[in-house]
Amino acid sequence: LPAAAVFREPPTAPRHDQVSNGHFNASAASTAPSTSASNRPALPPKPVVADDALGSRKRTVDDQIKPPTYGPLRKVNKMPVGGDILPEWQVTRHEDPTPWIKADHSKSSDMSVWLHKEVVDFYEMVRPREFEHAMRSRLVEKLRRALRTSRNYRDHDLEPFGSFMSGLYLPTADMDLVVCAKRWINGGPSEFFGMKPLRNFGKFLSSCRISNYSTMEFIGHAKVPLVKYIDTQTGLRVDISFDRLDGPQAIKTFAAWKEQYPAMPILVTMIKHFLVMRGLNEPVNGGIGSFTVTCMVVSMLQLMPQVQSRNLVPEHHLGEMLMEFFDLYGNRFDYTNTAIRLNPPGYMHKTKVPDVVYKNRDRLSVIDPNNPANDISGGSSNAGRILGEFRYAYQRLQKRMAELSQLGSRASQPTSILEAIYAGNYSSFRNQRAHLRRLHDQ
Image 1 (tube, rainbow, N blue to C red):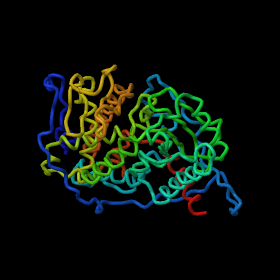
Image 2: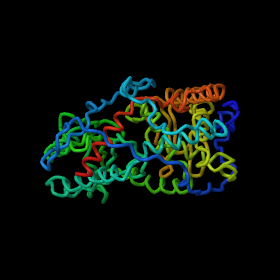
Image 3: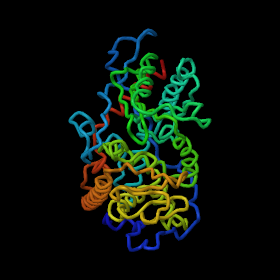
Image 4: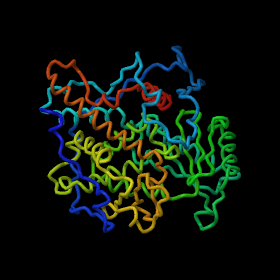
């Protein structure tokens, strides 16, 4: 079966001539079924490997297990970054470039089934394990205890949000935390303006031996001020923002979407890692973050007639849904004129969005479902590059499926469709996961 014949036409975002009245709404309002995906094939967790930081000798209770070293924090670069695969993710001679391949799917009934099975395999490889969640929870509790016992921050609350709370984090993903002063929660001014309070907070982290001050990064003159650091024990990277509630509010929205669209977490994970490999996932670098990706996936599902009519169950067609995403946003979506709206579902011409003023039309626009005055992707200065990468991904996957379809049984086994865009060096995932496993088990 030719690869190009497998996939249905994706929903087309309105061009400027299609939204002249300012609005475009979904034609159906029904919700997608919450069919369980528990019957899908699953792989066991990757085996724990030896830790070079400790060597092969027997460990004692006094040993300090050193985290994997990934180098310093990636400095914020406000200039556009390239979409090529980052050096640390490029294929190397001694690493398996497709570690998710554990079974031969070449005898699947058609290419869409093969791709679906491979997406399931990939997600099974990267999905969070219980010990990873436990260690990330410990990181949060450690900082909470430090705040409660400090002189300057005992009246501050700490809350995690983002991918950790949604359960969509990759093995080396950053932790997103927010610190809120009770005075600010009660209506007072924020104390975290400018660089000085951020650096003071960094010194506090260093005094608690939570992180090394010399490795921290302070972003004070941005829409969302940040302290970025590496946790000493786990080696995980942490982003702390201050005096904001939009992150925690998004958790409830995500939970509702997850129940409505069970395929959404898998698709979001696939897109997030695609962006991570190319350095296009950091909003401070002009990329798009986890919540923007989530909104883009949900919007696609909201506006697909075959999903809303329940003629197609997305979690049974994950390969098709991945291709739909790359085709919609890579080939069809007119991002310079169109804003994505989720509540109610639809698109709007940017000139008709009532509460947002666009200084730059060359960026994605996703209206915050919890705050219509907030464009959550307003910092996506690399939108053109990102959507170009989506277009390239669609082309590469189509080409790969056509090649494998022609080869048939002559293709080397097992082989991969996803390697066309996901082949890389996954040693950082393996090493970080093994390190957290040892910390958890000691």
